[in-house]
Length: 364
Image 1 (tube, helix red, strand yellow):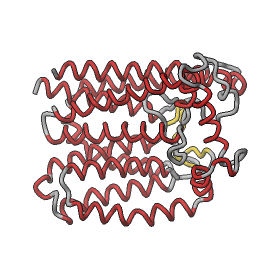
Image 2 (cartoon, one colour):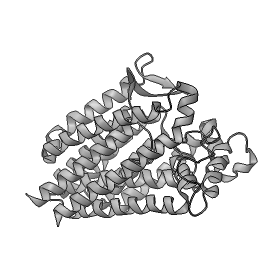
Image 3 (cartoon, helix red, strand yellow):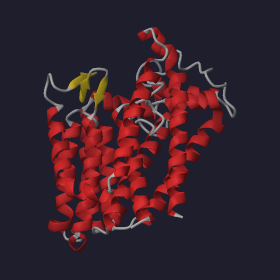
Image 4 (cartoon, one colour):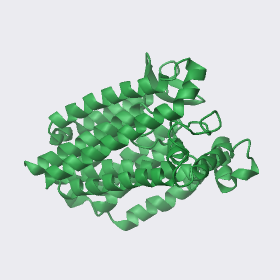
């Protein structure tokens, strides 16, 4: 049974990756040909990320996942150090006012993606070690909240609100399942509302995103342009789509067509059936992810799998919601499908860890 879970999880992931490869080329070839004189520019880079991701996935599958417990604190310290380092001018790469990347030749590394994994591993280890004290405020609740708060603060300084919110969501889910007192979680969630409001209102581009979400047609050529073009792409695809490669919105109408809004291009070219197919694949992925969680051989594996599945699930929901105009614009890629370096690689690593947990559950 466990073997079937691993095989099915692997198969669904491969299908999603293959869809991503096809759609990235379809969505980016014209843009890449115009700006980089190479229609395969983004596809070749994405395949290089895939190669790195597959290699790292193979490595994490070869190592017993329980060994991550021994390195939970060093990984967290390294992640926090990298988050500080990327903020230093001249060290971190700045793009459009955001300093989120290290640049190594043609490759970029986003330390916040590594921080997500490090925090999930650390919280999983903490919960498994402190399960008897998890309902205590000082010994069970505050330590992970302090780690989360410091990590989120560093990510917000980049600035990157989307990644901060997704990480906070995952940690809250993990603590909720660990049976932390609901009064503690409710207090944190209640206190985060005014803080989140200040973060949104204090940044003009975030305010503009909220206003565009509420009424994109108020500024159709400005802040509402991206949402409108995304909805046009989805609507023009109808049920069966315009055909693979026949998107019009990718012709310099829809910004970030191969990254944040690739779901819209899928809808335009493959229609409602194509988008429902992608959503169904994510539902199947989550279903088998939950199977891995339930069959984890120990508490550390249980919460580690829970954190990884929750992260992928949250990003998929947010990306699809943004593309459909149901949520304000956030820079979160569609897992396994969107073009992206660090996020794509760590999504693959997450699947490798999930398969590792499932395999250990099969042969404890």
